Amino acid sequence: MSIKQYWKHGLLTIALLAIIGFTFSAAMADMADYYVSPTGNDGNDGLSPETAVLTIQQALLRAQPGDIVHLAAGDYYQDVVSVRNGSSNAPITLTGPKDAVIRGGGNGRIFEINHDYLTLDGFTIDGLHGDPASASGYRDKLLYVHGQQIRRGVVGLRVLNMNFANAGGECV
Image 1: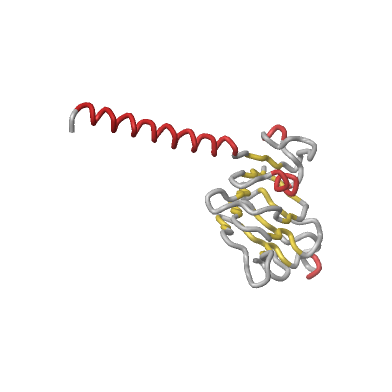
Image 2 (image 1 turned 120 degrees about the vertical axis):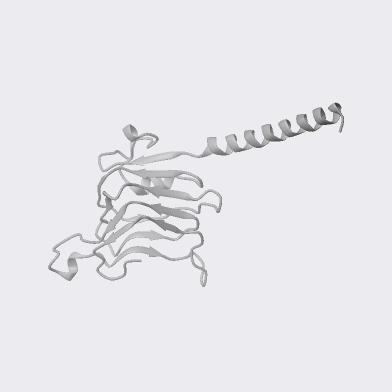
């Protein structure tokens, strides 16, 4: 190849890399991080630890495919239901340390997942909400997964590094 051909191929390669980089940057710019804290406020924007929302549900209402919901350490006395699908290349992720503990709000299911491509990572779901000596002190279902269509389950659910404790019935 002549120098002119190398130059032509080099410019084409640089142009393609620039287009790929721009596309990737634009996709990454659309992704958001939301923060939840037991001391947060659902009137906040949830976009930083300092402006965290109070409820996981509020963060999930805002989260879109590719977004990450970060749980701060502490106890969450609330039930959670998934809101929308993530996608195979951009799941909605809920993450937190082991001492971020979802204890539920008193109903049968603590965390109900009805949508595809969600990732749960690192936090704890604990079913003990009353007297540990009584069967009624435990939540019946910790993580309940049910598809939106008959005979079709949830696709792309990833449960990583999680801790499940004190299930009164079904754990998962």
